[in-house]
Length: 112
Length: 111
Image 1 (cartoon, rainbow over the protein chains, first blue to last red):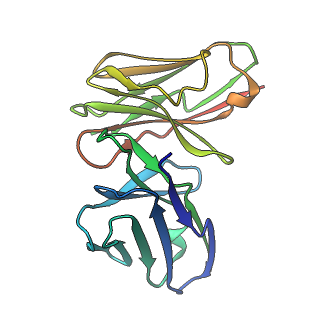
Image 2: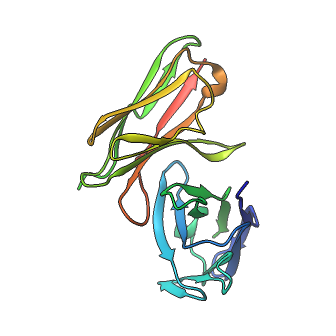
């Protein structure tokens, strides 16, 4: 079945470091979404990318959608302790429904 | 806008008891989703409704689980009888076009 995979599953960085996390889909996606879940919280929608090769920035976060629309990346610049949480990517299920297929998430911890 | 409202926030129940989780979606959102989150399995979609009609319930684990959406502003997820393996955080989310808005979740513990 359709799968969305995220690598790495865990990332531990020193405060101030940059890092990138990746999301790969087994199928071509019409769009890709990213969510952030703080410890003990609920997933919060961050962004949606629709166009092939699209790049969007939110402050220190840069999101990119691959040219083939099967992968995406999230790059965080100068990581802060407020960035701690689990980041999920998600893509629409095949068949054109509103159902999203979520990756298993990338858990970020930051050493102050 | 109060967002998606779920109740209760926490539920502890004994095995075999009936559990009902409640959700009020954002007004105007025509799709509602029930997810279960565990460490082992991540976020799993249980069921989703569009315009109050169940569209996909393929994620519902078994007959012990049932969900209803009697109107556009209310949905329930019922587990009867509950089992310890049902312990998880249950999220409700709603959307129109684009990203989901999740509720704060119900943390269910079945002992």
